[in-house]
Length: 465
Image (cartoon, rainbow, N blue to C red; front, top):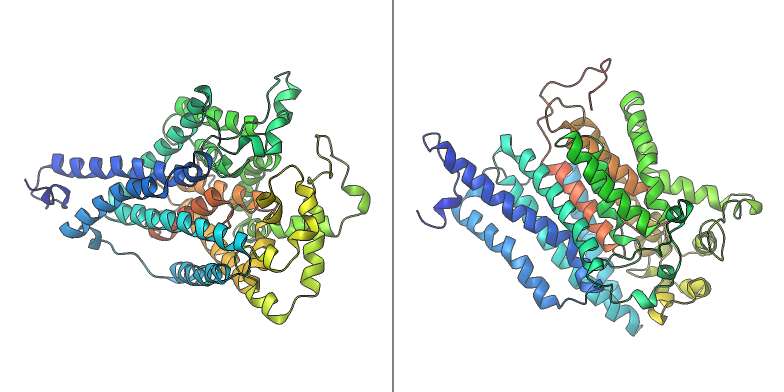
């Protein structure tokens, strides 16, 4: 048997073992590809991986994809092109323009940082397309099983790798330059555990890699495999979130589960509410009573409940009120906070960070970052995609079948991610891990969902977990 024919779709007369072999090969490649997709940004930043090594890692699934092209496998089900994919295409084109604007910036720091960010983003994008294309080459009745096992396996590997590297004394390359690592983990201190905040060895920042244990915890809520394994996965993810001690990530999961529960009973309206949650938080803080800020300043922060974020957001509001027409609708390009000049007004909040960290500090709100980078056009495109994908996930979560928990978990995760967006730039370029996983979930919902025409859970019946 030739190398190419080994990957071909067997005819009905072919033995079932051949089908299993082809699926098994794809599953192995997908597990590896998911893991590299998750780890690649953190390897570049946290372990200073050479881009050439990163390109070599990406070449493995890409070479497998070439074999699928050669065997004709990828044409068994082509990428669909609907309203969701149209929005993804528009976002891609608009983001290319935003990066182009940064590349011709007068500031050397912006140009050099944006070029590194572009290389990382381009590699992740190429790998993401390869992963989805390989998934689409799997037969319809096996695709969701392969997706579920590959995704969960890669997440477990990633979380265990963080603990293993830390136990071996391998730390993040920039740990000494990140002041938060010198602060105790608040929730663990409440139970008498003296532990400084955990910085993931493979990550691009203090909290960016928390999206992976958050995703694993969200999936584990719905018993993907068995109650025992799901509990173990959930405890692993929860331990990492507690060790990192990001308040937003810790609160996001219970908030998201509550929104998912309400969406089951009150319909699609809750989906729209969940998508607008970060904007609601911004408005609540900006329009607050001045005495509200310090109510829960229980931690070791200098600047109040939101660690100075409310100061950043107030400066943004002043900028927005005086912005030109072009800035309102088209933004300022990547690192728009620098191009607009407002980052210099709040850089003192990031005292203790290096010069680049202070000068390039984001607005710590994903939606506000969309507005300052890409204006109203960018914000509308992203909000439209979020609402569409949440609606699609809600629909899939109601389809009867053994993979219903997968789509429930992805829906809870996406709502949790939107909760985090209220205080972090999670789904923007700067939150590279969150940016990657956000588009992964979007593409999975747009391309790999179950057939909606199958039986659905009646509205009067409560779905079983």
